[in-house]
Amino acid sequence: MNDILKYFPDLTPEQIAQFEKLEALYKDWNSKINVISRKDIDELYTKHVLHSLGIAKVQKFNPGAKIMDVGTGGGFPAVPLAILFPETNFYAIDIIAKKIKVVNEVIAGLGLTNIKAEQKRAETVEEQFDFIISRAVTNMPDFVKWIRHRTKKDNNHELLNGILYLKGGDLTEELKDYPRATLYDLTDYFDNEFFETKKVVHMPLKYKGV
Image (tube, rainbow, N blue to C red):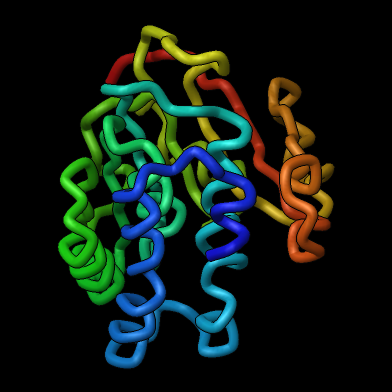
């Protein structure tokens, strides 16, 4: 929790309380339905919460913006970002029902009203979004296929509408066919050694309609 306050010092008392509740909520639900590895649950705030918030260091989301989290798992990155941006609308999807159950229980436990979670495949979503976010659910070519035609036409942020993807390691080969992709090293924002190879990939996607 100290790291959250260190890197995001302008949180409201309500946001601080919500972030503080995350540990107990996830430990409780993780003991019933395993969505976070047991070795990671003790480092929840660094490896999951702060990692998710790395997206916010690259792009702050505007009030009223629509963001879809594909393959949300236990609710990352959508849940921490929904706390940080209470006036932004988040839609978290995953194909595994038990993971969505945990996400919905966490949402209810935090009292969040700006995020919805459903068991769904990205290819079946018909809405359009300012950004599609995710945390390394698959390789970029497959991810692009899943979410094509899901970006809104009008750009209202500093970055162009498209993908904001949390990834680690050497992405040269994976991104060779995407010259418009920009990599942001999370070590530029966080000094914890966990982030040494971690990046946010921004890739603008042209609006093509549905």
